[in-house]
Image 1 (cartoon, rainbow, N blue to C red):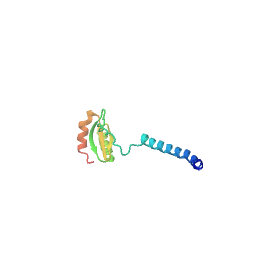
Image 2 (spheres, helix red, strand yellow):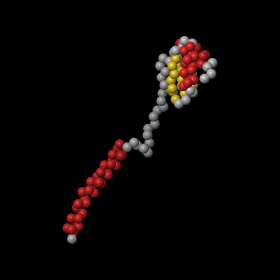
Image 3 (cartoon, rainbow, N blue to C red):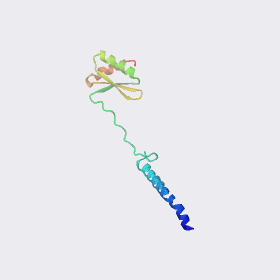
Image 4 (cartoon, helix red, strand yellow):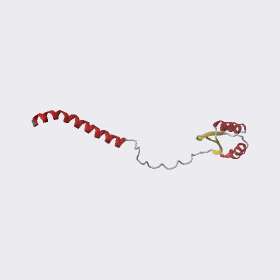
Length: 112
């Protein structure tokens, strides 16, 4: 009687072992290559302030259109300038250092 029982269980052992091995392999892969959700991530250091290079910020405005209008005013005064989006609703107007004082005085009178 035990031979009959052993003969009926033997065909099931191979697939059961194969599925067990695949399941363990899947769990290992998820652990090894997972996104780490739930694990504490190391904190990133604060970003350094953006490098302005040769340019100096003379005004910070909340709308890009206003910054472009100020840039046009500066251009009419012979001052070269550019704009930089630094954050949502924040745009800087940048000029060369030798023009910074004149640009700041014009930006102070600018209604934007």
